[in-house]
Image 1 (cartoon, rainbow, N blue to C red):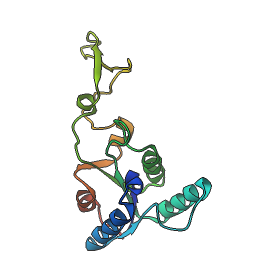
Image 2 (image 1 turned 180 degrees about the vertical axis):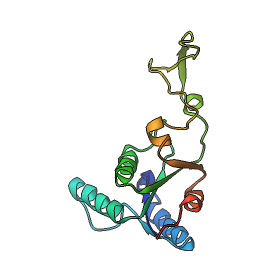
Image 3 (image 1 turned 90 degrees about the vertical axis):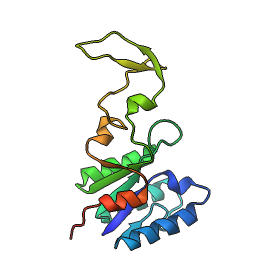
Amino acid sequence: MKIYIAGPDIFRPDALNWAEEARALCAEHGHEALLPMDGDAHTPKEIFQANISLLQSADALIANLNPFRGTEPDSGTSVEVGYALALGKQVVGYMQSTIPLIERVKHGEVQPPVKNKKIVFDVEGFAIEDFGYPLNLMLAEPVHIVTGGLREALAAIKHTT
């Protein structure tokens, strides 16, 4: 299978080494890795179009959904996940910790129960979703999220031909 590997890993200082390791790991599992850094694109528009083309040619997507520059996944990765879902592709995400979002976000004030359910707000006054997911339900519901890294996500990919 061709698997598009999405995530902020392309911004790592050791991105080229990471890419080699990701390709090798995919090959060990009998897959071909497609990475956002593949190709020759340079301008924002070219990079976007190249990534969309790679994603369209993929059989599945694996996404690094670890928090990036905050408590949520990389926004570009979230776009790629949504696009893959819209195309009907299999999507597996991975996180080092899958504890519920409500336990990860800094709490502010706890309000009295509403309809027998307490509503917890973050420090900026926004309600924190409490469905037991590690991320917002719009990512956590359609994406199979595993605890771990790329290796664990590859193990969760369903082989299709």
